[in-house]
Image (tube, rainbow, N blue to C red; front, top):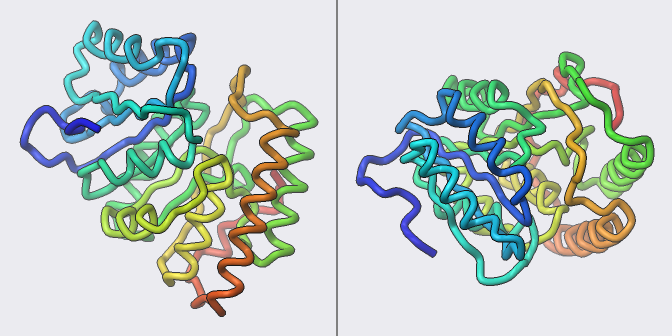
Length: 266
Protein backbone atom coordinates (compact mmCIF):
# COMPACT_ATOMS: atom_id res chain seq x y z
CA UNK A 1 0.00 0.00 0.00
CA UNK A 2 0.95 3.62 -0.43
CA UNK A 3 0.73 6.61 1.84
CA UNK A 4 -2.94 7.65 1.57
CA UNK A 5 -2.29 11.38 1.96
CA UNK A 6 0.02 13.40 -0.30
CA UNK A 7 0.53 16.14 2.27
CA UNK A 8 1.50 16.12 5.93
CA UNK A 9 -1.61 17.77 7.40
CA UNK A 10 -3.78 15.27 9.24
CA UNK A 11 -7.33 15.31 7.83
CA UNK A 12 -10.27 15.71 10.18
CA UNK A 13 -12.54 13.36 8.26
CA UNK A 14 -11.72 10.28 6.19
CA UNK A 15 -14.12 8.70 3.70
CA UNK A 16 -13.39 5.15 2.51
CA UNK A 17 -15.01 3.95 -0.72
CA UNK A 18 -14.36 0.29 -1.62
CA UNK A 19 -14.27 -0.39 -5.36
CA UNK A 20 -14.49 -3.54 -7.45
CA UNK A 21 -15.00 -3.27 -11.22
CA UNK A 22 -16.50 0.21 -10.95
CA UNK A 23 -15.19 1.51 -14.30
CA UNK A 24 -18.70 2.45 -15.45
CA UNK A 25 -19.64 4.31 -12.27
CA UNK A 26 -16.55 5.76 -10.60
CA UNK A 27 -16.48 8.82 -12.86
CA UNK A 28 -19.97 9.82 -11.72
CA UNK A 29 -19.03 9.28 -8.09
CA UNK A 30 -15.94 11.47 -8.35
CA UNK A 31 -17.90 14.17 -10.18
CA UNK A 32 -20.39 14.26 -7.30
CA UNK A 33 -17.50 14.54 -4.83
CA UNK A 34 -15.94 17.35 -6.88
CA UNK A 35 -19.19 19.34 -6.60
CA UNK A 36 -19.46 18.85 -2.83
CA UNK A 37 -17.71 19.80 0.42
CA UNK A 38 -15.93 16.43 0.29
CA UNK A 39 -13.40 17.97 -2.12
CA UNK A 40 -12.06 20.19 0.68
CA UNK A 41 -8.74 19.28 2.26
CA UNK A 42 -10.12 18.58 5.72
CA UNK A 43 -11.59 15.50 4.01
CA UNK A 44 -9.46 12.55 2.97
CA UNK A 45 -11.02 10.33 0.28
CA UNK A 46 -9.58 6.82 0.06
CA UNK A 47 -10.67 4.75 -2.93
CA UNK A 48 -9.72 1.16 -2.10
CA UNK A 49 -9.65 -1.04 -5.17
CA UNK A 50 -10.37 -4.68 -4.44
CA UNK A 51 -8.47 -6.31 -7.29
CA UNK A 52 -10.58 -4.94 -10.16
CA UNK A 53 -10.11 -6.45 -13.62
CA UNK A 54 -11.63 -3.57 -15.62
CA UNK A 55 -9.06 -0.82 -15.01
CA UNK A 56 -11.03 0.85 -12.22
CA UNK A 57 -8.02 2.15 -10.23
CA UNK A 58 -6.37 3.76 -13.26
CA UNK A 59 -9.65 5.37 -14.30
CA UNK A 60 -10.26 6.61 -10.76
CA UNK A 61 -6.84 8.26 -10.62
CA UNK A 62 -7.38 9.88 -14.03
CA UNK A 63 -10.84 11.19 -13.13
CA UNK A 64 -9.60 12.54 -9.80
CA UNK A 65 -6.70 14.35 -11.50
CA UNK A 66 -8.95 15.77 -14.21
CA UNK A 67 -11.33 17.08 -11.55
CA UNK A 68 -8.53 18.56 -9.45
CA UNK A 69 -9.30 16.37 -6.45
CA UNK A 70 -6.00 16.59 -4.59
CA UNK A 71 -7.42 14.91 -1.48
CA UNK A 72 -8.27 11.65 -3.28
CA UNK A 73 -5.95 8.66 -3.11
CA UNK A 74 -6.34 5.23 -4.67
CA UNK A 75 -5.19 2.20 -2.70
CA UNK A 76 -4.73 -0.97 -4.75
CA UNK A 77 -5.11 -4.54 -3.50
CA UNK A 78 -3.10 -7.19 -5.30
CA UNK A 79 -6.10 -9.50 -5.55
CA UNK A 80 -9.87 -9.57 -5.04
CA UNK A 81 -10.60 -10.52 -1.43
CA UNK A 82 -13.98 -8.97 -0.74
CA UNK A 83 -15.68 -5.75 0.31
CA UNK A 84 -14.90 -6.34 3.98
CA UNK A 85 -11.19 -6.68 3.27
CA UNK A 86 -11.20 -3.49 1.19
CA UNK A 87 -13.04 -1.46 3.83
CA UNK A 88 -10.76 -2.79 6.58
CA UNK A 89 -7.67 -1.79 4.59
CA UNK A 90 -9.04 1.68 3.99
CA UNK A 91 -10.20 2.29 7.55
CA UNK A 92 -6.84 1.24 8.97
CA UNK A 93 -4.94 3.32 6.40
CA UNK A 94 -7.13 6.37 7.10
CA UNK A 95 -5.77 9.12 9.34
CA UNK A 96 -8.90 11.12 10.05
CA UNK A 97 -10.01 11.71 13.62
CA UNK A 98 -13.44 10.71 12.30
CA UNK A 99 -13.87 8.01 9.63
CA UNK A 100 -16.71 6.64 7.54
CA UNK A 101 -17.19 4.22 4.70
CA UNK A 102 -19.84 4.27 2.00
CA UNK A 103 -20.59 2.37 -1.19
CA UNK A 104 -18.76 3.53 -4.30
CA UNK A 105 -22.06 4.13 -6.11
CA UNK A 106 -23.13 6.60 -3.41
CA UNK A 107 -26.55 4.96 -3.00
CA UNK A 108 -26.36 6.76 0.33
CA UNK A 109 -25.73 10.35 -0.69
CA UNK A 110 -23.07 12.88 0.22
CA UNK A 111 -25.45 14.85 2.44
CA UNK A 112 -25.87 11.74 4.60
CA UNK A 113 -22.09 11.25 4.76
CA UNK A 114 -21.75 14.82 6.04
CA UNK A 115 -24.59 14.27 8.51
CA UNK A 116 -22.89 11.12 9.80
CA UNK A 117 -19.69 13.06 10.47
CA UNK A 118 -21.59 15.91 12.12
CA UNK A 119 -23.26 13.45 14.51
CA UNK A 120 -19.90 11.89 15.36
CA UNK A 121 -18.38 15.34 15.84
CA UNK A 122 -21.22 16.23 18.21
CA UNK A 123 -20.40 13.17 20.32
CA UNK A 124 -23.73 11.44 19.73
CA UNK A 125 -22.05 8.02 19.53
CA UNK A 126 -18.78 6.24 18.79
CA UNK A 127 -20.39 4.33 15.92
CA UNK A 128 -23.17 5.73 13.75
CA UNK A 129 -24.80 3.74 10.98
CA UNK A 130 -27.34 4.68 8.34
CA UNK A 131 -30.50 2.62 8.58
CA UNK A 132 -33.17 2.27 5.93
CA UNK A 133 -35.42 1.00 8.74
CA UNK A 134 -35.27 4.34 10.56
CA UNK A 135 -38.72 5.98 10.62
CA UNK A 136 -37.29 9.19 9.18
CA UNK A 137 -35.50 7.52 6.27
CA UNK A 138 -36.54 8.31 2.71
CA UNK A 139 -36.25 5.50 0.18
CA UNK A 140 -36.32 7.15 -3.22
CA UNK A 141 -35.76 3.99 -5.28
CA UNK A 142 -36.70 0.64 -3.78
CA UNK A 143 -34.68 -2.54 -4.20
CA UNK A 144 -36.12 -5.33 -6.38
CA UNK A 145 -38.56 -7.57 -4.49
CA UNK A 146 -36.22 -10.56 -4.33
CA UNK A 147 -33.52 -8.46 -2.69
CA UNK A 148 -35.97 -7.05 -0.15
CA UNK A 149 -37.02 -10.60 0.75
CA UNK A 150 -33.47 -11.96 1.06
CA UNK A 151 -32.56 -8.95 3.19
CA UNK A 152 -35.45 -9.61 5.55
CA UNK A 153 -34.55 -13.27 5.86
CA UNK A 154 -30.91 -12.40 6.53
CA UNK A 155 -31.84 -9.87 9.20
CA UNK A 156 -34.23 -12.37 10.80
CA UNK A 157 -31.38 -14.90 11.04
CA UNK A 158 -29.09 -12.30 12.62
CA UNK A 159 -31.67 -11.35 15.23
CA UNK A 160 -32.52 -14.99 15.95
CA UNK A 161 -28.86 -15.76 16.57
CA UNK A 162 -28.58 -12.73 18.84
CA UNK A 163 -25.88 -11.13 16.70
CA UNK A 164 -27.75 -7.84 16.48
CA UNK A 165 -30.96 -6.12 17.43
CA UNK A 166 -30.55 -3.63 14.58
CA UNK A 167 -33.09 -3.79 11.77
CA UNK A 168 -30.69 -2.84 8.98
CA UNK A 169 -27.06 -3.89 9.24
CA UNK A 170 -26.29 -3.72 5.51
CA UNK A 171 -26.92 -0.12 4.52
CA UNK A 172 -23.67 1.18 3.03
CA UNK A 173 -22.85 4.12 5.33
CA UNK A 174 -21.20 3.66 8.74
CA UNK A 175 -19.11 6.17 10.69
CA UNK A 176 -16.67 5.86 13.57
CA UNK A 177 -14.46 7.87 15.83
CA UNK A 178 -10.82 7.23 14.97
CA UNK A 179 -10.31 5.25 18.16
CA UNK A 180 -13.38 3.08 17.52
CA UNK A 181 -12.29 2.46 13.92
CA UNK A 182 -8.81 1.35 14.99
CA UNK A 183 -10.23 -1.00 17.62
CA UNK A 184 -12.94 -2.55 15.46
CA UNK A 185 -11.17 -2.92 12.14
CA UNK A 186 -8.05 -4.38 13.73
CA UNK A 187 -10.33 -7.18 14.93
CA UNK A 188 -12.58 -7.70 11.88
CA UNK A 189 -12.07 -11.12 10.26
CA UNK A 190 -14.90 -11.34 7.70
CA UNK A 191 -13.70 -10.25 4.26
CA UNK A 192 -17.01 -10.53 2.39
CA UNK A 193 -20.30 -8.64 2.53
CA UNK A 194 -21.19 -9.80 6.05
CA UNK A 195 -18.38 -7.74 7.59
CA UNK A 196 -20.94 -5.06 8.58
CA UNK A 197 -22.52 -7.59 10.94
CA UNK A 198 -19.18 -8.30 12.57
CA UNK A 199 -18.39 -4.60 12.96
CA UNK A 200 -21.66 -3.93 14.79
CA UNK A 201 -21.34 -7.12 16.86
CA UNK A 202 -17.81 -6.18 17.91
CA UNK A 203 -18.95 -2.67 18.82
CA UNK A 204 -21.64 -4.23 20.98
CA UNK A 205 -19.08 -6.51 22.63
CA UNK A 206 -16.81 -3.53 23.34
CA UNK A 207 -19.70 -1.62 24.91
CA UNK A 208 -19.37 1.22 22.44
CA UNK A 209 -22.11 3.77 21.94
CA UNK A 210 -23.89 2.84 18.71
CA UNK A 211 -26.65 4.89 17.10
CA UNK A 212 -28.71 4.65 13.90
CA UNK A 213 -29.40 7.65 11.69
CA UNK A 214 -31.99 8.18 8.95
CA UNK A 215 -30.89 8.14 5.35
CA UNK A 216 -32.06 9.14 1.92
CA UNK A 217 -31.31 5.98 -0.02
CA UNK A 218 -31.78 4.96 -3.62
CA UNK A 219 -31.17 1.52 -5.09
CA UNK A 220 -28.57 1.63 -7.87
CA UNK A 221 -28.70 -0.92 -10.68
CA UNK A 222 -25.71 -3.19 -11.36
CA UNK A 223 -25.20 -3.98 -7.69
CA UNK A 224 -22.16 -6.11 -6.95
CA UNK A 225 -24.21 -8.32 -4.60
CA UNK A 226 -25.40 -11.62 -6.07
CA UNK A 227 -28.43 -12.42 -3.90
CA UNK A 228 -28.16 -16.23 -3.87
CA UNK A 229 -24.41 -16.85 -4.11
CA UNK A 230 -23.37 -14.00 -1.83
CA UNK A 231 -26.33 -14.68 0.48
CA UNK A 232 -25.09 -18.21 1.10
CA UNK A 233 -21.57 -16.94 1.78
CA UNK A 234 -22.91 -14.31 4.17
CA UNK A 235 -24.88 -16.91 6.11
CA UNK A 236 -21.78 -19.09 6.39
CA UNK A 237 -19.76 -16.12 7.65
CA UNK A 238 -22.32 -15.11 10.28
CA UNK A 239 -22.56 -18.69 11.57
CA UNK A 240 -18.77 -18.75 12.00
CA UNK A 241 -19.01 -15.36 13.73
CA UNK A 242 -21.82 -16.57 16.01
CA UNK A 243 -19.80 -19.62 17.06
CA UNK A 244 -16.73 -17.49 17.77
CA UNK A 245 -18.64 -14.97 19.85
CA UNK A 246 -20.59 -17.71 21.63
CA UNK A 247 -17.35 -19.44 22.54
CA UNK A 248 -15.91 -16.17 23.83
CA UNK A 249 -18.78 -15.79 26.27
CA UNK A 250 -21.38 -13.08 27.00
CA UNK A 251 -20.81 -9.66 25.52
CA UNK A 252 -21.31 -6.40 27.44
CA UNK A 253 -24.53 -4.48 26.94
CA UNK A 254 -24.31 -1.96 24.12
CA UNK A 255 -25.80 1.46 24.68
CA UNK A 256 -27.72 2.54 21.61
CA UNK A 257 -30.76 4.60 20.71
CA UNK A 258 -33.54 2.01 20.57
CA UNK A 259 -36.13 4.75 20.36
CA UNK A 260 -34.80 5.81 16.97
CA UNK A 261 -35.33 2.38 15.44
CA UNK A 262 -38.23 2.00 13.04
CA UNK A 263 -40.40 -0.96 12.30
CA UNK A 264 -39.80 -1.09 8.57
CA UNK A 265 -37.93 -4.32 7.80
CA UNK A 266 -35.06 -4.45 5.29
